Structure formats: C-alpha cells, structure tokens
Image 1 (cartoon, rainbow, N blue to C red):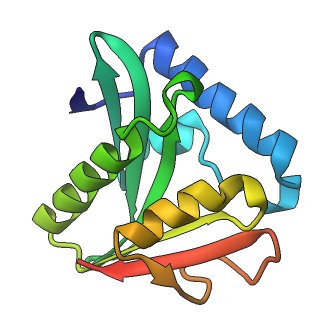
Image 2 (image 1 turned 30 degrees about the horizontal axis):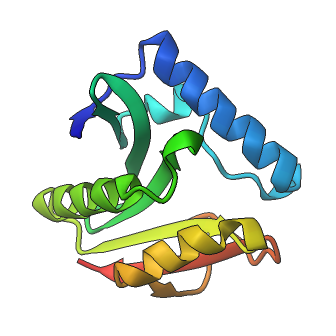
Length: 151
C-alpha cells in the first residue's frame, strides 16, 4: 500500500469523499455532521493523504492544523470493500508520524457516538486516543465523541 499527499484534484478522490459525506448524512443528523467538503480540505491548514493498493484508492485521512502544537484528525475513511483489512491502522500510523514530524504535540478528533462508529472508536483507542472534552469550535453533542492523544 502506498500513502501519498493528495491535492484533491482528481475525480476518483472527489467521488470517494462524496460517498463518505453521503454515508455520514444517512447516519448522523445534519447538525452533528463535521466532515469537511472538498474546498475546506484544500485549505492551507489541511494536509490530505490518499492510500492506494495496486493502484486502487482504498483509504484516506487528513490533519487540520488548529494551532502550532495541536492538529485535528479529519476525513479518515476506508473503502467499504476493504474495511477491517488494516488500511485504517496503516493510515493512522502514517498520519501520527507525519503530525509528529510537523511539530504537533497533540492530535484530537471528533467521531460519531452511534454504534456504527464503534470500530472507529476502538481503532483510535488502540492507538492511544482517550476521550476528552470538545476542542476547537466543537460544542457538547450527544452524537459526537471527542478523543485526543499526545504525540
């Protein structure tokens, strides 16, 4: 598997992310949806990675700079046909290493609190993320779980 910085200019990644947003809209109330759209993901404070296996897009993830020492994990997604095959773990390992290389000392995230998101919460826990209070512009939300870890 190859993980590379993606400029989000291709139609394949646009479709992949659109599927992600549509899935989140089907599961999460609109007021609790925090996925960034393509324009937001192209912002200067965001670095976005795509994961490819044998040329096929199999996953993605990003970090958004919150301040000089704190970043947020965004847009983690594995292709549905490849869930539970280790892609998310490899992406997360890569992103954690990159965040550390960029000088961040904390990485936080927001994910859903519904049963659907339990595998994601378990993955984050496996990588040392712990529950925390809302951070940045987030507010308490029964549909959200907030997690953080030191780097």
